[in-house]
Structures are given as C-alpha cells and as structure tokens.
Image (cartoon, rainbow, N blue to C red):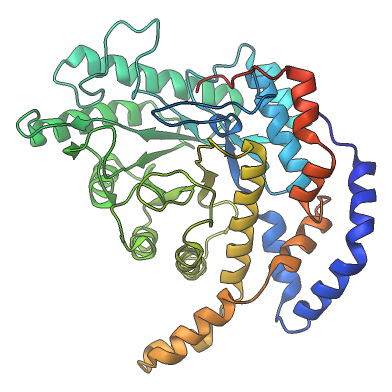
Length: 424
C-alpha cells in the first residue's frame, strides 16, 4: 500500500496550528534545539521482518488480516511505516524466513521505499523442513560435530545473503543450553560454541560486525550457553574486534540494572546494538516503553553520555532495532508506538544537563543528580519529536493517520483476511 504525499500534507495541515503552539513553547526553553532536531532526524530504528505479522503464545495465534505474505510485502509494510514516521529506514531480515528470490530486485524495492538492510539474523533455534540434523539439543554447542558444522554453514549462508543485499552485520542468538542438571558439560558446551563462533567470525567480510545476543533463559530453563552480558562479553573478546554484544531489553533476569550493563559494554567498546522491547515478567516482547519507560530513559541517558564521551555518531555507530511480538495489537500500530517511544526517550536523554549532572556527581549531591535526570524525563518532548518528523517529511501523528486512513482495512482488502506473515 502506497501513501500519497498529498494525503500526508493535508493531514498535517489540519494539525499544524496546534503543533506550532506546543513546539514553540517547548523550544523556547531548550538550548540547541536545532542540534537536537537534527539528531532526531538522523536517528533510524530498524524494523525486524518478523514483527510485521501477528505473533502468538503457546496457546494460540490470532492473525489480524492483511499480513505480509512475502519478503516483498514486508518491505512494502516497513516502507509504509517509514513514510509515516521517517524513523524506520531499515529492515532486519531473518533467514531462512526471508530468503530473497532475487537479491537485485529486493534491493531495488527497498531503495524505492527508502530502506536499507540492517543486521541479518540466523536461525538455529528451530528445525527447518529440509534440514538433515536436529537442533533439539543445541546447535553451535552440540556434542555432535556434524550438527555444529551444519549450524556454522547456515550462519555463513546468512552472511552471503547479507552481502548480496548490502547488510553489514550478522546477529547470532542461540537457544542452546540445557533443561536439567547433568544434561550438559558446561565447559565443553562453551568450548564447542566458541569454536563454532570462530568459524563464523572467519567468514565475516572485513567491514562486517558480528553481534552476539544473550538471554537468561528460554527455551532452556536450567542453563543457557550465552546467558548474560558477561558470557557474551567473554565470547566476543575472544573472537576479535568485529565481534560485539547485542542487548535485548527482555533478555535479563528480573530487576537487572540494564543501564549499568550498557555503560560498561560501551566503555569497553563491545556494545554492538539493541533489540528494543518491554516486559513485565521476562521476554514478553511488549511495546517499547509500555511497562518501564523510566528504565528506558536511564538506558538512553547512559548511551548518550557514553557515546558522546567516545566521540561516537549516535545514528550510525550502534545498531538500533525493535524486537517485538504482537498477539492482541495490530502489528503496524504497535511498531508505530514503539518507534515513537524510542524517539521520545532519545529526545529526553538529549535534554539532560550534562554539566550540572557531572557537578552533582562530583559533589556527591544525590538530590540534584536525581532532579537533573527527572527534569529531562518529565519534559513532554512529543512536539519536538513531531517537529523532527515533520521536517523529514513525515506525519505529525502517525498513529492517527494510520487509523483515519483505514490502512489495516486497505491491507486486508489487498491481501485478504486469512493471511499469515511468512516465518512465524
């Protein structure tokens, strides 16, 4: 479905007067508002191909209709999102769910929608129909070397597709682990995994990165071979400079101090990027900022401070991606909400008075330090984010436009009600 520029302009015109009043009020009290706006315009969040369809639970899946039936339709849906918010300019593919039939045609279609290809994601957490050996007892850690070799070859194949599409990174997430004590030799599992990762690392092009994602538990609940940031950090340190840790916000034990983890990984030059989502209990994959917005702000606060300290480009030097699953929401509406939450939180972090905060920290002035952070967090920056979106050619209220334009109804009309997104 294509969104006409005229429709966007007409929609914005009806909201412009109210927006100008709100934006001017906030901008009058913000130093370097133009610099902040430019950072917001530059910042892009990759959309994962698998988040465009209805997810599900162990008990069922309830598709909304109009889901993308092919890689081409997934690109079209992300192009639609990007035309509305101007902050979703990249797509992250999952192989084998998204194997391109013709890479040249897929690249051309992506360019037409203003999209680039973000990290490629491998899949050794489930068996595929044509697969010879099973990953039931692990992949890169498996006691059977032939299974490990099969998993390595799959990752190398993913790199090949990524090169064809212009991607520059590979994300490896492993479900490897054990369900019961005694099932696994921990040392041998680590050594097997490291050996396998070395083989994948050796296949990386010179200008690529490997992101190693960790997760505390699930589907194995006794042990996970890459269970936390320390284990991922150990692996990537042993692999080399192209290997970095990827942080998924839902992949931690309850009450983990994620902002401290982020700060230390960034300090060590081993923070590769993010999978943004939110959770109440575990890996819930909920809408970004829907449960713990202050934690998200504290993470972005550390990111802005740490990246500035190292002279890094906010938009380009880390990988920014959503990883979500939708069972009760329209997937596209959920993604619009998630990107908006990320942009709002990033804007709030840009407002933090760094000099005042550093002075408070150096003077052990705990009260002032808290006030500095909460002053930025409590600032309603939605008009600032909307202004950046407007200047980039997007919609002042993307979700409102989506509903007013009956976008989902039009997608159902085009694709049908009984459609299922590929790969899920």
